[in-house]
Length: 443
Image 1: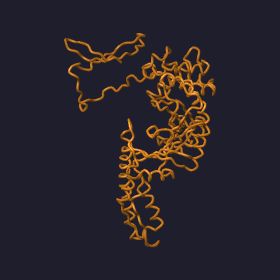
Image 2: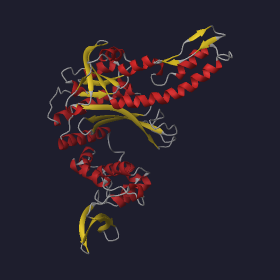
Image 3: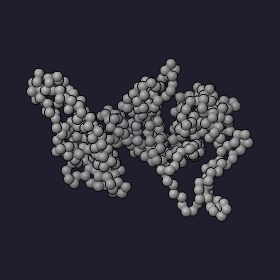
Image 4: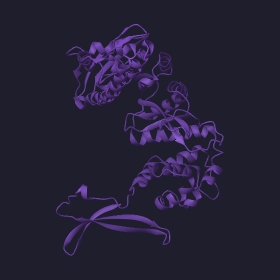
């Protein structure tokens, strides 16, 4: 796509020209569109606009450029022994073609030929029909497990070297994604599980991903059956990803032992995993759950006036308090971080949850005088009504009387809510064994 100005009858106009491939003429042709006068600067009334032909512009070209920058095709082909149909595309060309379709226009394999013919003539000299599903499955079986391990390492090393990415600090998280693989199709990877999309009709594949702090750019990954837990995926990833991470450290100019650090969220916390990370040569940085004993100890220490200090530089709008303490048998630096954005989001969530809880509590209040609710049922239902968000910390529900005739009332305590906002809401507790890092670096 090119945007330029051209004079027509003494007036200058802005023109956009898109270069597309004409298969009939076997050459590129330009399709110009007049955007409007060049002067004065055009002002668009968004309320008066309407979409007539939505089209993605530049996404395929950007992906091809990235693939060319670190020779993605070459790395895959070399790792796989230059496999490919004769005549036909190589394994690398097939893999990149599939990735481009999934990224730009997710759809079935039968649509891939049309997608490539319409948008990817620079990818390969082969026609789109050569990238069909049967062609991919004819080439894929000979690819060994060793080749599948070596190709992503080579690609990540090339990305680190080309774009000067940091391989010291990698953020780790897991997710899963739906796959339309039929239930009757055998396979070890796609399994039934708790899908992030909340769909229950499709099998899912789990993904553990390590992302560079530069960018952020994904560097290392591991797939697993979709029904796996976060803790299980982390444990499985440790040994498999350690040699890959060491290879990236060498490319980035670091020689072992590198100061490798894994950043995770609170769902991955457990003392055995922390010890496993230390054994594997990793430092740890994670966001502790607020219900964790260490977080419960750190939050009150950050509550007094003056305990939270403003950071500098890009984080001048952030306040934090730092302390060093024992977390079980582990020596950790804890940083309590205050976030206005998080506070506002939590307040909105509490307001919604409180409206729903009031409806349930009023129903209980009306049902008690008639003796229709026992004391045990009353306690259970009131606790359930206040289970959303931290409502139980400032909504008081005293229950008196005996089992046949319980007495029930509820009220919101303003002082308790102020205390909650002062000590917990809008705050995160970060824990790390990188004791020499500055507070700003940890945040």
